Amino acid sequence: MNKVLFNAKIYSGIEGQEPYIATLFLKETMAEGPLAPYSAYEVVRIIPQVFNKLVYFFSDRNDSHFQEITDIARQEFQDFEFYNAHGASACPEFLDFHEHSEFYSYNCPSLDAKRRQHIRGSVVGNCGISVYPVVKERESVLMDSVLSTLGVWPEEDGKKVMWKDLDGFKTVLKNRGVSNRLYFLTGHAALRIAAMEGNPNRPATDKEIDRMCGYLKDMIDQGSIGFSTGLYYAPCLFASEKELLSLLKVVSSTSTLFAIHIREEGNRVVESIDEAISLAQKASCRLQISHLKAVGERNQIKVPIMLYQIEKAHKNGLDVMFDQYPYTYGSTSLFSLLPPSALALTKDELMTKMKDKKWREATKYEMENPNGFESIAELCTFDNIFIQALGNTKEYDGMSISSIAKSLGKDPYDAFFDILLSSSSLAVMKDTTTNIDSLKQIYTHPLSIFASDSLYAGDNWHERSTNCVFESLSLDVKFRPKTSLYSSIARMTGRGSKRIGEQKYFTIAQGSVINLVNPVTMAPYFDSFVPSKQ
Image 1: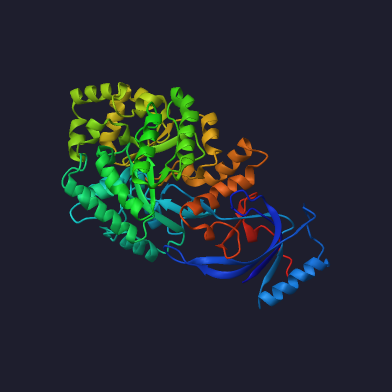
Image 2: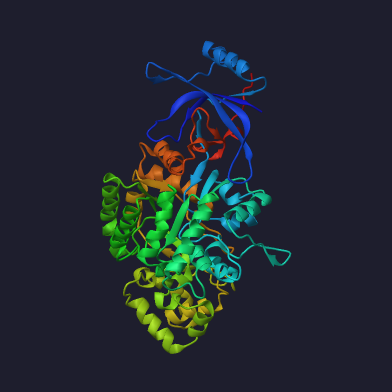
């Protein structure tokens, strides 16, 4: 049914536009998306209600302006419902710029955890982790690579559901009825696994680099919005600058996006941001720095320097922005705590090595005395690293590695290795990485975009996977009480959608195709008012 929304306080999602009172004329339609279409409303007319620069609330049904609105509505629509919002708030549904919800989308096509937060759009394939392209006889390597981030590869009737490229994966999701707007980055790890023979945890040959570039171009031709890498994670961390620049030439030539989980977020976070900026400048491509933060208490003083680096690059002409989630603690694969010498091994080699006492002692020394890599174990300590989900047991969920070790009467490193050995390769951790003052500086910056970094591997999920929008609105009220809501909504809607060319679906403007939310109550908009129909 078409709708006329009278007296609504509009938070448009358009950068810099303060809220205003208006009447919206909304035509019922179906929104076309990357996957299945869904019910939405096209904004066919906006009539602001501002007089003498003062907002005036119309509430009297006998008012002449009310009659004028209803007359226009009858001319515009044959059938419509009239709602008097009485000045209540309305904004578009939200865009999450950094997620890992590919398999969650398959397993739960209704996307309950996202729709409950009114997240209509999601950028997936981040941190170098995607599930395309898939090359025959390399499937198992890719499946192991994504397990701790995306979860178990989907199955039907006891068989793995397979696809070979982005088009194939989108078809699988479309057939499942996924109707949220998913935007797909192509992950570096999947490209390396597809293009390289044997163990991908090594430098690539020129021939393999050419193959990667070919696969990336194919995925972009199929609708990928760009390339992502995670230089902290295997196998991406083994890439040479030549390999990265070759891939970024494809990104530049297609005017798509380069998203990066930088090499280190701790002791060498400043140098790692320099590396990301240098790569983007050399390739002349747009740069998105993922979940910007400084890890470890001693590194929090670096946050102003980090922001200055990005601001300087932006001022000098680089199209650079960053995203971040509204929490001081993160979540990732427990295996990522291992040093590069361990991550270079194949899965079978690693499982064998972890049984060896001498190898454990040598690896413990590397993790306590890192040289050329970021050791989260050293930065955060095992007191601040907690089990989020394991593939073999729920016994340790929520416990720190230190507390598990104490309960077992073991050294924390031995407990850590034993957990990995028995985890069935699914091991997700939660770690305290930053503090609230640093989060505030990053989160309120004008180059910052809303993201959740949602993970849905296992059964026990980080709060950012289920509560991120609510936490974001809450933090903005705390951080910026005078301007919080309209600037927060722009950050969560129009700012990110402009970056991927999709503002039509995440801003309230003439021609927008949207669903509406009351950001104050976070209830579905049309359910939150008692309609007064004309």
